[in-house]
Length: 433
Image 1 (cartoon, rainbow, N blue to C red):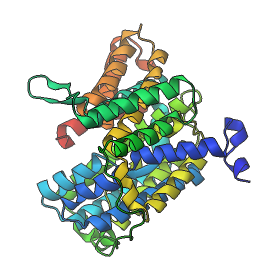
Image 2: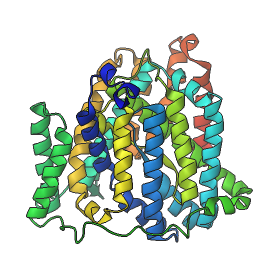
Image 3: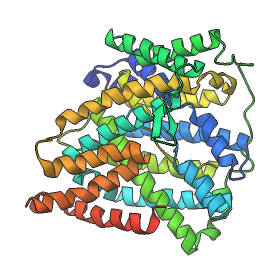
């Protein structure tokens, strides 16, 4: 029955492949269970409550995506959005975290409304195919950059902005070891090579003393008493100009981060048909619903995760992979001590390899046409350089109408792209910091 529902035969997959993919995605993004509470505690929230809210939001959102949209895409509170929530909104603007959560809730409800009437799907489908390929390739470079940074191979440098890390550092060497092992497994064509590489790296890390062995296997689930429902009870505080700006920023970043992630994952998995994403509306509704659920539980914006590409690289093609990932997030509530072994050197190689797989989209872009090459290149390069998928999309999409009009190809531009051109310019003028 499950095979038929998820169309295993159509996608040439099976339970084993989908399960390995789901596990791989979970391991690649399990860091959020530690990092998100660390960020939100800076805003005055309780660590334990945020941990539980993070795991539940990820589990519920990913389950909706798997069962309803049937995509191998996992969701969790978004990086960048949680930093904006904690440091810009709460600390910078002095807005109570309860009111900020209400802002997240409202942004999620607005998303559900505009998704239900098909606006989000129309926008995504209006994006030219070559810019969609650029988004996929840009995300590949972006997550490779994140992987290199997490590995310690790329570090901040006051003279050159970035530079090579300390190759004598044990954690850096562990990440390099993991990368080499994963590359060998992938070259040999071993299915689940990314996941196996992560397991081997974690075991070696514990063996040489670079990763602490977990002190326990099972732990108690922290209470969400302080965060659960706070968003609903503080809706009255959102009716200010300041909160309007906050909600608009949540909307903008989540919209285009999600759009970019969906296109990138779909492109890698071969889901795009004539440049369009099947069941796009269902995927977008799943993402919107996850944001609403997450805000009520007590966490910042929940969104689709680019790390889902690691599961796709491991062979995941159906929503069953997401069901597996969702189940692991639920289990994580009980086995939180084990998550201590999923450190940056363990996940970094997976992100780097996934980046390698995703940049293959570069070959589908017509670089011989300068009016296409410029916006595509800017979309790709600005994602890692600005550390933002949404910003990369915005800059590339601003240049697209300009180059096409100058070339005399204005009639080929979808009217929605002109609208996005104006919106992105207004975003940089009024909202971007």
